[in-house]
Image (tube, rainbow, N blue to C red; front, side):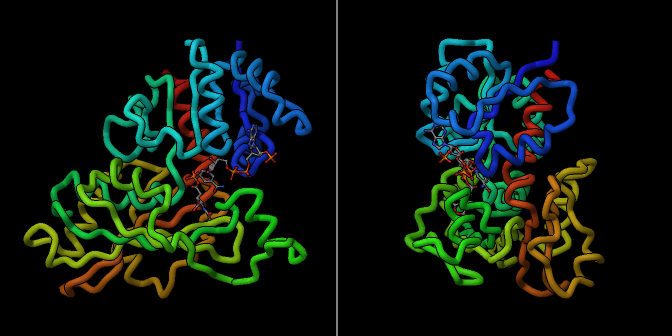
Length: 310
Ligand SMILES: NC(=O)C1=CN([C@@H]2O[C@H](COP(=O)(O)OP(=O)(O)OC[C@H]3O[C@@H](n4cnc5c(N)ncnc54)[C@H](OP(=O)(O)O)[C@@H]3O)[C@@H](O)[C@H]2O)C=CC1
Ligand SMILES: CC(=O)N[C@@H](CCC(=O)OP(=O)(O)O)C(=O)O
């Protein structure tokens, strides 16, 4: 019998994109609730408990409530796309490529926390350099990023797409998270293996899906002898053989005049770049992804497939 999958929040931005990715799959059976009943707690509880894997695409509080609903039922495994459990040690962090053992942890887990979109880029760049001893203890990491507006869910989509919305946003590009206490900082710190929280400056552009995450570094403050080439080699070695996360060859990135935030729209892959000038003292590490691809829905399907393969 095909494993049963229930997407709680299937009518929201992340849930819909997971459904699209699952359309046509015959190896799983999708359980579904009509849109008008999406907040019907009794119906959700039934569906959640009838699933082999429940994928939660809900705000944090609703995710916590859903986890409560299945807490006594060991037959249900959970992938949560919210921020609620990402630094909870009882949950496997759903970023399979972040270290060699993570895919196996996800395969074996009952509870998997899908990463945030920005942290996927930041951790993807930072963690291999921490693990290799290149990014020194105490280094003051900064993470600057731009996201497509679907990152803000149904509410921001309406604000960006509907000029008649009472809180319509007309800016083509805006900074937010200005108090520097964004909900993604804890997971960047923990899973980035940082001993000091990064300064995180997010922004949104007037495009639906796409993301650029930048981590600029001063080479002189990294492990002795670090160069642009050695950073690239460490990232390339870490992701060797991977096809979802890839490291762009230096020769290729040196020839690029610009990076297009929407290049990977609709794709579930992530590209990592090392920019700078050979022999100079600074580099800029860049991750390019779709906030709803490897940044959310694509990663959730990848995690589901790992769990089904266990
Ligand atoms: N959008 C993105 O790029 C990313 C999103 N995420 C995370 O994924 C989760 C979902 O976000 P997103 O899809 O963007 O949000 P949306 O607002 O687009 O969708 C959320 C869905 O959950 C439903 N919902 C809200 N509260 C409840 C409740 N109490 N009970 C049942 N259903 C409820 C909403 O219904 P209603 O329409 O009635 O409000 C809606 O259908 C969030 O935790 C978000 O942070 C993670 C990575 C990236
Ligand atoms: C553009 C925008 O608003 N983005 C969201 C993050 C999207 C995301 O990754 O959400 P989760 O952390 O819940 O998974 C934000 O900054 O809150």
